[in-house]
Length: 352
Image (tube, helix red, strand yellow):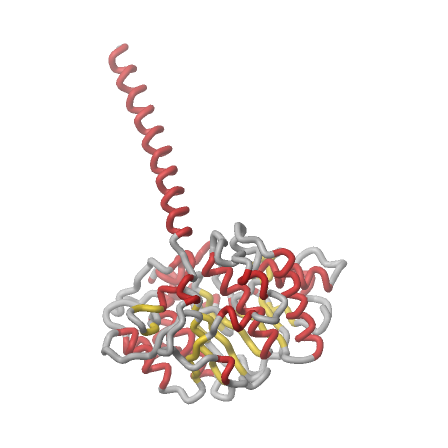
């Protein structure tokens, strides 16, 4: 009996050490993965790069902007794109023919056709007359702006979430420069947003306004609001907190403008300085806690019901990027993509 108890204790101890060790290794791998993110490619200077956004003047208030901020987009001297990113751009271009769509790369590189999937995807996007694929020089882009010091001092580059935080800064800065609409590259647009009023965002949860889709008019009150966002970033930028510099900024702005309001749902029911706050169903019909529903055939009807009044879906790429979808499956995400970015799906090799 004692021998049996001794073995049981040894087995329990083994399980405890195993799970503790697994947790430590997972945490360590997460830290290492986070620290492997880099924006060093921003500093690469080469004559072979896309035309720079500074060389043109986007139509103010009539443009939609996407930012590709990772250095994974720069391979062997050329820019690359993933199928889901391309789907975001195509769905937006198809449904908003009167708007100019800008895909801005912070990495250098040129469009070079070698026949691989990425090349076909870029070729698909360039077939749309309202799509412009351009370079953005981060240093020059931030120079003379309220957030110049965030880059020049190294605060962004030393962030624990450097690629995400670079994107956070750019979305507000671009809307400050040009006005219009910013959208994340992990959305699929379901219907036109051309007729939406300027100055809008959508609720993510009861206490958070999401920053995955943002709109500010180029002048007047809209420009003042997005400038307040930049000034907030200048003072409150935090390289340790993932959400502080994106949704945190727009949430703080709206709560400061509507001082008697404590929750985002309450803001929806008042005139908050001319800013329109849309319900979660408009752009975030499936919350991030249930991101996996987009990747499971069992939820095809459920997602269809959730999205029937939506302008777009947001697929929470930070959580879902490793979930590859075979092209012969019928999961909600792929089903939506077939309808709204059909040419991108046609250009894919085996998975989406």
